[in-house]
Length: 398
Image 1 (cartoon, rainbow, N blue to C red):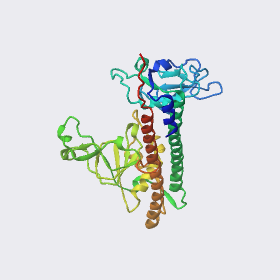
Image 2: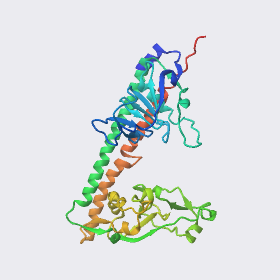
Image 3: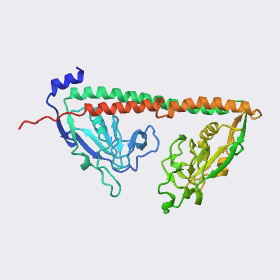
Image 4: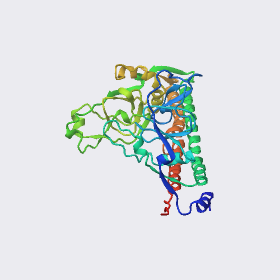
């Protein structure tokens, strides 16, 4: 019998009481940004974080000099990422209706944190206007309240899972930085390189098109893959969710491109991102599709070169929407090793690609490497969390 089972058998063999959230917590909603004591950066004077709705670091709005919440509390995102619960064991200043719950009875706050994480997706928020979670919507949530020793043992078990996930996430962050360093170093460290414009290794470039949305003959029962820029995420694309018809290809600018093109998004928020299509496809007009001349460069090598210059590309965005064009992309300089010896050049490119592929798998592959392990540990945590918090309700004596 486990320690937790022993505690439950001893302290609450007949179940536990469920109480509304407001029984155990003061509930508070954040207000306005402090006008006269605000700093965008942390200083010696302004060291109290101002927190808004959002996930992890995205909830940090700025800094102030006096906290509104001084006791350890939980925050619950009321807008945007509705329901996201965070544990706060430091003073802070909540704003923009961020919900704060602070214990008013003796309770293990981490225990309630794990419980609130288990119901993050269960809030029924009206879709009218700006969706918002409010105090009346959460104050009657029923929470199981086992004796403190049981709460503490559950926290010990669940924290062991979250601590492992945190360690793996930190390792993944370090590996990504290491990957970026080696990528940039491998591409440029060779003394025998020549910087050439991207267009020098491109056999053909083209953009695609968007068939008229109101024309059902272009979309209904379509079987031809049609790629949009939201699918371009520094990745290899093996499946495409959108399809158009043969008629759309024949009558619009959405034309076929072969597999293994380097695709660069050139419009709006996605501009500068790149990908490789592993299947033949068509694309919309916001994709610049580069068919690489394999007698001069390997497509995967060119992909890594373009990827490594993402910041350079986005610095070239133009117009109110922030667009690129084919001239800007094709004029990007990339390093070609041993430019006077094609065979040696392609061999060196392949060597670099092999190294970077291994790093990429470790950092990004959701079926292998660290992302897969993090996902597995998160699923394991959620499984045990839901089992450990599923207490039978005690029958109250009348």
